[in-house]
Length: 83
Image (tube, rainbow, N blue to C red; front, top):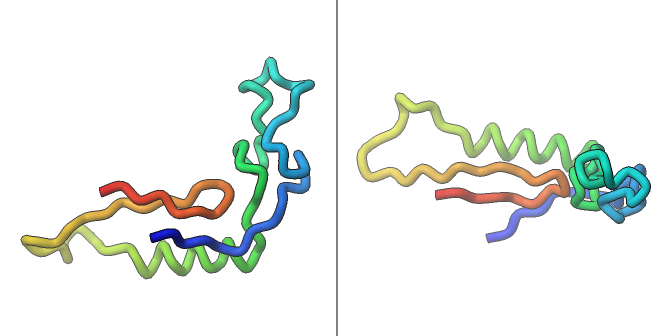
């Protein structure tokens, strides 16, 4: 399942994700987009926060038989699921 949030091309690197002139600093990876070439819009960031809150459960609410899936969002807005 792929969940995507509203995103736009990174304004700092213009979607390249890196800067060749700064390859000596962390391999030239763009710090704004993390090398993804895209960043979340305000609407996308708000939706990501709401999604994270909806998918969060406290440890005391876990019951036997439940499956825990750890989720994260990459800098370009795609969900990363770890079971």
